[in-house]
Length: 184
Image (cartoon, rainbow, N blue to C red):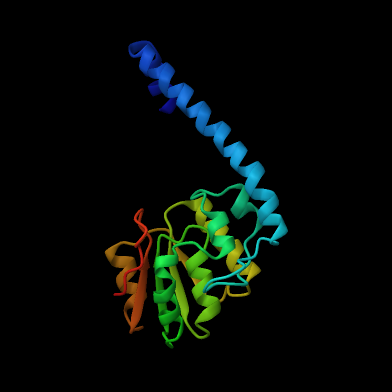
């Protein structure tokens, strides 16, 4: 499908296609440059979060090299979503049975909260298979695979089945905005 669309765009809109193709080349080059900068820093930190509410959280190497969100360096430094850190600390001071993480990515919140809230079960929803795989790896590295459960989608039926017998709960909603922490 993508190949057909690409050929159509090249034929029907050659100038637009050429500009778009050049922009995509720049995006690819930028990713390579960023990886050359970030990877040595991440290696020097042993892929471990250095500060903040999830200090000590370890990521697999692949979370940095295959990062979908490209926010691995702020996470490792412990400065990721600093405006939410007070809320996260408050959340971690409670004894919740269930924590919901909608949009789990590589597991920063899902695994971080499982490490901090000792008896909580964390249900993490993530639609991207690669991200779910990274979240599983992160949970394994941090010894919380028994308490982090991954679901491929957050729809009414799956959410209802998860929450059915386990309240009170909180949902960490990851959005594109910097204020993506919302208590339920």
